[in-house]
Length: 137
Image (cartoon, rainbow, N blue to C red; front, side, top):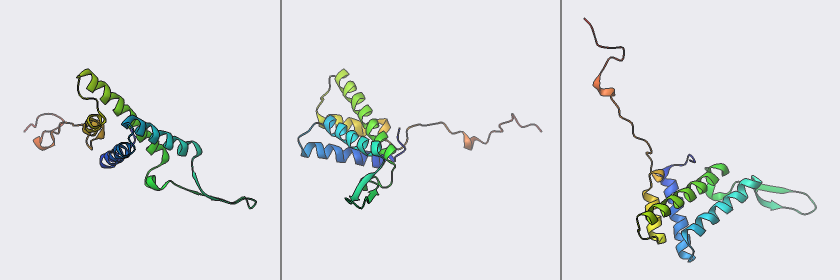
């Protein structure tokens, strides 16, 4: 899973969903388009901002939306979204639930992989136990 904060992951997903609704496209089409766009940037490794003809001058820039992330992280994020989408659609189908994009989007936001805490571990630090065994006097 790409190392991007959960709040940013949910923000990306919400923006993709809103774009899909605005363009009358499915959520899957929006996610696939996002991944295809990310792949283009990853494949070339850079974006051309400016180029000259005979002077052979080119300028490159990191994409504006992902300045804080590497292109690999954003591409990984797009793959995570597609995996979560596939799992969500399968779970909704198995439960005979509504499979509309709005339902899939809500279920994707609630998925554990979109949350900040992905693992919980018991903590016994306040019990004040001696790790080497019982205390003797």
